[in-house]
Length: 155
Image (cartoon, rainbow, N blue to C red; front, side):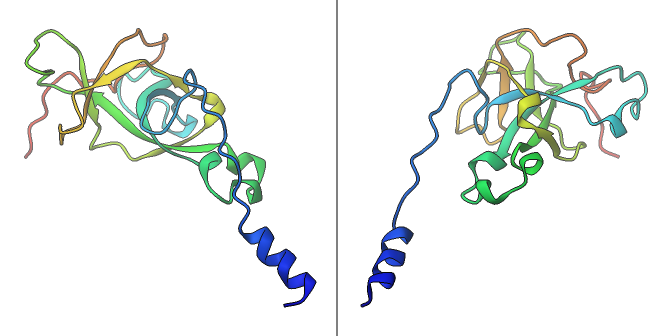
């Protein structure tokens, strides 16, 4: 083996140190407030929201090739929108506001810097319906889509 080959082999085994995790910042699977894209404003009747509620699914910052991405792409995150669960049952406790995946809304892409982490708890990992209870107030202009509290009927 030549000296140049040894250097290349050695460099390929170098592992980058993990980025420190700040618990106050949104992490994967946290509930977040996100900015509703401007093209979606006013599409729903009586929808005065500017922010929605969702679960942070992925973050380009966490990709192994993040340093190769343009800065505007590195900040992008994928969010699963949430809506109110019309049944509203959480571990058998009535009166709590329960959120679940919004089957009618597509996933949203937002800048990480525009997200706000919302303190929440999940029903439990065994809950295949993945429901959450928010433990803090949402900011003004943030909430579920209009009519979310009504149980929808499949036709």
